[in-house]
Image 1 (cartoon, rainbow, N blue to C red):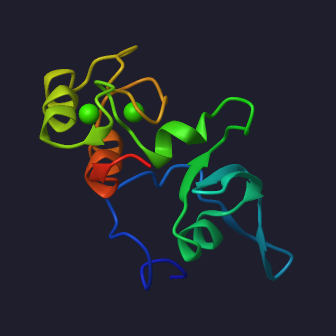
Image 2 (image 1 turned 180 degrees about the horizontal axis):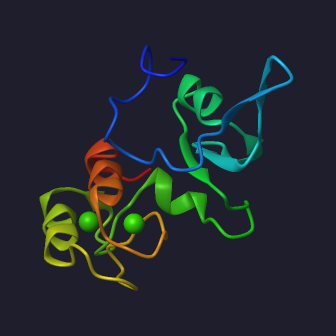
Length: 125
Ligand SMILES: [Ca+2]
Ligand SMILES: [Ca+2]
């Protein structure tokens, strides 16, 4: 098993699209996601590389489709701080599609959005 020694525990965050395939006896890595960091969006990354630079990785998308600024500061109610108010909005819209609480813009409010709020706790810069 390649995975499991670093990064988030299984079941937390986005694990979809992680692709390690055995081809012709060699492990080949497929670049099927993008990585949002405080510096912006990196295209053609894999999850492990993104984890190593403390980025947030998204499968099967492109930098054109993702707004990384929101990832740096998921301030849902726009008061300049990520705090319990934003957390409560995520909980209030849990499972809802098309909500402003869908901070990672994957179409649903779920644990990924919750983790982004918790992981960016505090004033926006
Ligand atoms: Ca806020
Ligand atoms: Ca989401």
